[in-house]
Structure formats: C-alpha cells, structure tokens
Length: 508
Image 1 (cartoon, one colour):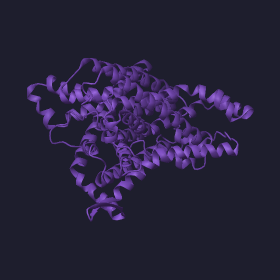
Image 2 (cartoon, one colour):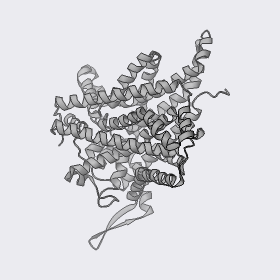
Image 3 (tube, one colour):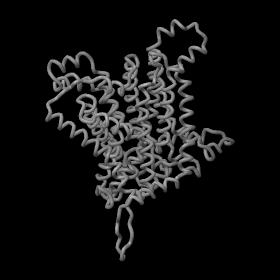
Image 4 (spheres, one colour):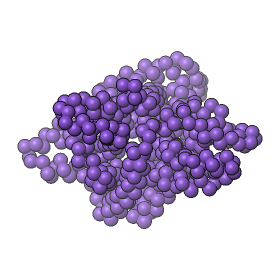
C-alpha cells in the first residue's frame, strides 16, 4: 500500500518523474520536429503520420503495449513484478511509458512553434550564415516558450494520471492520493501539495497556451499541417549530417512508435502448451485471429464507454456554447483559460474525491439515486479533462472567424440574426465536429478521473483493461489493445486532415 508513504518521498518522486518525462519528451519532440519540418529527412511525411497516429491512443493502451514487451515472455526483461522488487526499475518504466505517450503532443506543440517563428529574420540567417547559425541564434532562442509549453504538457500528463504509476507501484503524490481516496485514509498534507502543484502547472500551461493561441488566431489561419505541406524551410545540410539526422529521427520513431505495435502483435500470437510436462511456446497466425475474435467478449464494456463518452462530450459542448459568448474579451478569455487549465491539470484522485463529496454530501437525500444508479458522477468527473480541450478548440475557431470576417461582420450587423448565425455555423461547423470527436476520444480513453466514482455494475473498457493489466498482458488483452490503438490512430490521422478544409474556402 502506498497511501502512507512519506510526503517528502512522494513529492520527490513526483518531481523526479515529471521532470524526467517532460525533458525526455520535449528533447525527442524537438529532434523529430526539426528533422521532419526543418531539414525534411527522408520519409518525413510518413514520420509525421507515424508520430501523430498516437495522439488519441489512450495511455492505458500504450501501457498495455509496453507491458506486452516486458517480462520473461517479452522482448524486454522488465515487468511489474521486477518493478516491485526494484523501485528504480519501476520509476524508469513510468518515465519511459509516459514520455512515449506525451511525445505526439510535444511534437505538435514544437512544430507549431516552428511555424510561428519562421519569418524574414530566419530566412536571412539561413541565406547568409547557413542552417547551423540560424538554428542556434534564431530558432532555439525564440522557440523557448513553445519548448516550455511542451514540457509543461508532459509534466501535467504525468502528475494527473495514476494508471501507469499504479501498475509499476511508483508512490508519486497522485498514486498516494489515489490510494488514500480508495481506502478512506485521507491525509491533508499530500492532498494540498498535489493540488498546489496541479494549480501552478495548470495556470502556467493555460496562460502560455492562451497567449500563443491568441497570437496564432490573429495570424493567417493555417494549421501546422498546412504549413508543413506548403512551406519549405530549405535548411539544407551536408549529406553526412543529413544521413545521421535521418537515422536518429527514424531510430526514435522506431523505438517509441513501432515497437509498441510489435509488442502487441507479438503477444497476440503466442501460445503455451504442455509437452511431456514441459511448457512449449509457439507463435501462430491463428492465435492472432483468435485474439481479435475475443474482442467481442467486451461488448458490455464498450457499451458503457460509448454511453459515458457521448454524454460527457455532449455536456462539454453545451457548456462551451454557453461560455463562448462571454469569452470575446481578452481578459475574460484569459480567466476562462486559467480556470480550465487548473481543471485539466487536477490529479484524477482529487477529481474523484471532489465529485464523490459532491454526490454524497451536497445532493438532497431524494436525489441520492443519481450517484448509484446513473452515470452522473463519471460524466461530471470527465468534464475536468474534456471541457478544457473542447473549449480551446471552439475558441480558436471563433477567433479565426472574427479575424477573417470582422470587417464584413461590422458591415452586416443590420442583417437578420438568422443569416448571421448561418454564416457563423458554416465557418465553425468543422471546428465543432473536431471538438466533438477529440472530446469523445479523450472521454473514451480517460480512466483516472472517474475510477472511484463509477456506480455499481458499470465497467468501462478502460476499467477492464486497467484490471487485466495487473495480471500481465495476455492474448485477449493484446487483441483488444490493438483494436483500440487502431481506432485511436485512425481518429488522430483523420483529425489532422480535417483542418485543411476546416474553414470556409475563399472561393465560397
């Protein structure tokens, strides 16, 4: 049990894991981003698609993929049992899994920063002094805020989630608070420290994102995907350095993005039989097909996850629609972003504690059935994860609409509201679709936010995977993880393609 771990040790491990994950993910993201969008390594388009395919893959699926490669039957000699025997092996496992999970987000944050800072000064430095000088004196210094944003995102993802730390028994503050809430052993000091860290991290992340998005919304409304495909930075380097950079980037992508798939597919096909009292392992394609067939065993879990995700994203869209009209002022928008940033960074166990107290103490006795017989608790808990993302996406679409058609809107102020509303809907409709899909994916993949407030009899896919992971990854779990990763990858790549046509074309 980790609920009684010392506050000093839990705080130290929280910062150690968070700083390690943030640094590792940001450095790898910078390398991949420069290689793909700056130096145009061989196969850079495929590299962008590969790293982006993990954007909406849940962290518990990635934990399953890496666990499938650990242990005596895997590629890597590491398992949850080994982690329990050697705590530092557990810390290393948590750092690695979270860094790989944060890499896609950090990659796009850094890539967006590269797009924003590319101007005449960068072009002049490239022409006069070459890519090395431009990178050292123009790119990296001005990319600092974006690197900080990537670091904060990775740090926040570590400190609010307890799925991976629970699997590898790493007693961070989040894990300690989770067990305190689970077993009713609440201690005020670790709870206050965890909340203080989340508020500071959330405010820093929200304000940095807000000011970056405010500037970006008032510039040309092209996504980094568009700029990657249309603007070439022409940062040519000597052929030997180009070859080394290409090998380095593809080495990172192979280890971080390809190996998890190989782990799952490998684990799906293994079977063990007793031959003369001795266990014999073999791999066959029929076992892979059988593992896919077992996905149907999780029909009930898929049903609960689908219901929960739809209700959650529906409520988030309704709240966003109510908040958007009040966010036109820059200071009110900054206030919204600050509050939502704190919500996003709040550790999952604290969300469970807050929602649990609300359902048990604030609701009238006649409404007590809402906690035990409905999905109200998980829906409210998931707003901490889904609402900030949905609001941010819709707010950006709204700001782009006002920037592009602000003067025209002033001239058409006298038109009927129906016509103005129709024009607005034509522009932002794809933004709402993107927000719905991403919000749905986040709700489907999150677990830490509502793990302890699920009503009796409700088991989602995330919850079932979390339970099964404690006993190791077997064929059936690997097959389910492959299916979830496949749909997460398709969702990620589809989202990256939508912004190209996400706004009203100038020809219309």
